[in-house]
Amino acid sequence: MDTVQQFDLPDSSGDGRVLDVVRRCWGFDRLRPLQGEAIGAALAGRDSLVVLPTGGGKSLCYQVPPLVSGGTDVVVSPLISLMKDQVDGLTGVGYAAAALHGNVSEGHRRDIERELADGEHRLLFVAPERLFQAGFLDQLSRIDVRRFVIDEAHCISHWGHDFRPEYRKLAVLRKRFPRASVHAFTATATARVRDDIVEQLRLREPAVLVGRFDRPNLVYRVIHLVDRRQQTLEVLRRHRGEAAIVYCLSRKDTESMARFLQDAGLRAAHYHAGMERAERRSTQDAFAQERLDVVAATVAFGMGIDRSNVRCVLHSCMPQSVEHYQQETGRAGRDGLEAECVLLYSAADMIRWESLIRKSAERAKEPEEVVAARQHHLRQMQRYASMITCRHKLLSEHFGQAYESADCGACDVCLGEVEGVDEATVIAKKILSCVFRVGQRFGVGHVADVLLGADTEMIRRCRHQGLSTYGLLKDHGKREVQSWIYQLLDQDALSRTEGDRPVLRLNDRSWAVMRDEAPIRLLRPKKGARRPSRHEEQSWEGVDGDLFERLRVWRRAVAGERGVPAFVIFPDTTLRALAAARPTDLDALGEVYGIGEKKLMDFGEVLIKLIGEYLGEREATDDMAADLEPR
Ligand code: ADP
Ligand code: ZN
Image 1 (cartoon, helix red, strand yellow):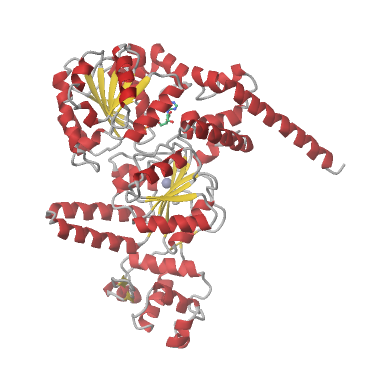
Image 2 (spheres, helix red, strand yellow):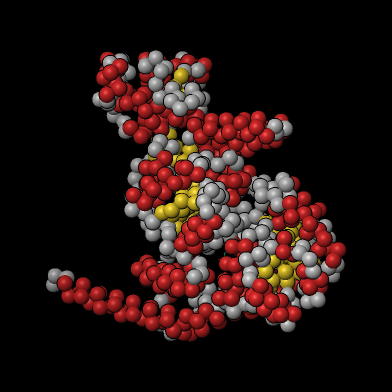
């Protein structure tokens, strides 16, 4: 269940005024979990803290109240690019909103100020630094501000992962506007951050609304790393023409990964904080307007992206905490449609992180408890990656929420994509003796080659064909054998030296395995086709895939012409609903999910024409096909 604490206000999900604006503006039939309560609190003028995962629908919670009550609510938001997208999106549905920040020209600013004085806008977005510029709060006190909304409110807490000191000043709002209510929104769930937000913003008996952290539309998969680029490409091939983010550890990695993917024919680019600002912006725009499918990025690529139809988030390297992982994968499937989150996992990444943590601790003279906390986060992440337990369950429980279902239908474990290998101990012993036979002087690649009975330059030079372990695993694939070696490293049944050319070494546990004193488990991907998740099957039910593609092409063109993100025109959910309903007149079109009054006016005719033409062509080809069939 979603938790609703200290909260006795009526929920507004049955409130006619609320449902009416939601339907007219956005074309949605009902509210999502906790939206009703959040809107109810805002309308009642009660402070609130709303914690919903990314994609949970936080924006609607603060967009609706001023439409119902009148007045101009102020949204404090940390990112200019997000504000711009939000205003574009709202304008697109006929909602009066504006943004004030450093990039707004003098003339435009004066226009907005006049419009505000005339009460024309329902929402005003401002950057925190703008809020505290001389005279600005005075200006606000002359207009009808009933609510302050603090978006990304975790930025106020140094326990969060994105502390911004200027957020601390927001406490002033309480004093300056005693009659306005304050509403904090965040996707960060830890109790410590939550308490900090309430305290720092001086919230008064806030309604605390905490949503479910599980994202049922995401499929989680963990793949044992063998070949970073090749495995990445294999995953991305499942998402041809769809949006994907590939997270890499270093700036250099993003560049080489993007080049590799381009060479493989994908529309890919790299992104990191070391790029020129203009270059970063143009990559973001290309991605938002669907001129680009794949971005290979460092974690710097995050908050600024607002593409709701990211279908794949792939971590080519292990993130440093489950919190980071949840946040980064949160960028997948924000529209609620199916999306895949893949983690390429290797014990070597673990070692890399540990040494990074040690180095940064030495450099910055960090206190012991900070280092210990980082190491704890890292181990939690490793636990997630190496356990063979439902991944939805692990993630939910990590965030303190029970997960009831025994089969999520949306992770590699529950979908039965991995299986244990029979005789794992026998295989492990073969690998360990081979490490011993080559004198504990070689790395993963060579040991695998010897076991596979390969004929390489190195094997000939070292005369390793003569070893008793040569060809012992020749009935298996190279990737499989390498993966098992990594799995042994992971279970600490084998060690690896540090440095550029790490070599495999036996340790105490290796000898215990040899003596049958320590159990070993080895996994392999199960043969056979990958099953779609339950969610994926359902979301494509009745959808005409060709028409969906045609609508996407149209949307890309319109977004490009207008210079706005594609989702501002329509999200994928609406395109799929259109491709399922295939409406041929305006009345039927108006009934489709996500088509509000303004969209109907703006795009109604064009869509009817496009769908009509498509259906006409379809009929013609069906006829032809029927004629070609043998009688
Ligand atoms: P968040 O800010 O929490 O990450 P958003 O506000 O961006 O999430 O919402 C995610 C998506 O869900 C958007 O495409 C939004 O239009 C859609 N959405 C929000 N509320 C509803 C609703 N009640 N019914 C249908 N779709 C909704
Ligand atoms: Zn599962």
